[in-house]
Length: 345
Figure 1 (tube, one colour):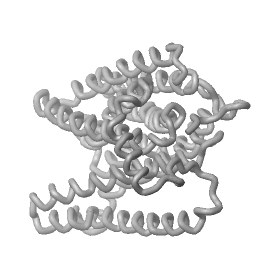
Figure 2 (cartoon, rainbow, N blue to C red; figure 1 turned 45 degrees about the vertical axis):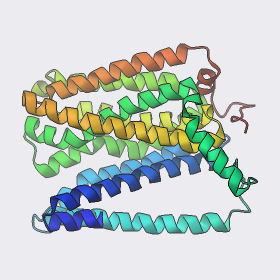
Figure 3 (cartoon, rainbow, N blue to C red; figure 1 turned 30 degrees about the vertical axis):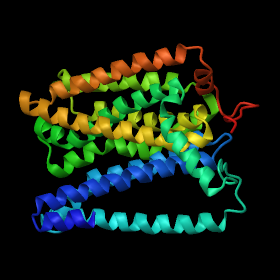
Figure 4 (spheres, rainbow, N blue to C red; figure 1 turned 180 degrees about the horizontal axis):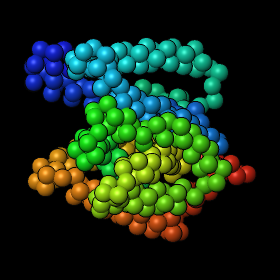
């Protein structure tokens, strides 16, 4: 982030592109590590709550990324590079937090009761196991790949819309840059407040796939309101509130489902596939959204595309919920139920 801010300040385009590649590598690795670590620590009845708290913090960072840059820019007299340095400061704080976590984890290593699938393996055995995991990606449960597919479409709809939402509000509703940024951050505010409670609900009730079906249907409805003239009667508030409910629930549902159907020794590679599918979807989604916007000179067709994503995800998640596979039953069962256990090693 420091290299990106410096490159923009010096107007060095290639440096800005290369530094963003490094930012993407670091962000993706962090997400995978966090997901695997939380799966080790919260095994019994708190998986949804743990993921919900992580998603709440993630939404806080997204909200700051959308709402704060314009405010920082105005504070420094319209200098937009100042908002990039604000992002660098946030990365520095994150680095300090990571160092503190590693130190705390090392000190508590003998006292925790985490699952450590390879703790008794020799160095050679660990290399063999790791290579076997990489080559056995296709042997992960079919239900997992269904979740990865849903994650790709739903995260694309979320993140790609996040990237255009402020401009959409400005163009379609005539809002200022600051007001558009605040409105566009509504879904992240909802995620910040609601994600932990969604996690608790999942732990107590189960029915993850049915909740996911409902969220996919709400996504389609919200994008339909934005695409087909709701703005001619009302502002964007109602669709954005609906999207807030969706985006506060979907990541928690999907990420907390992975440890329930994947063997612990494969959590790392599973979350890596999840992150890769999200990155691939976001890359293609952002590109297509930009092309459609330039081609039609409006965001309506982009909204229609995201609406179609919601319809497809509704059908797929409902079909997965109605299947009789063992993995589907595990996703429908509440963690808080008596006798529940995670997958054995």
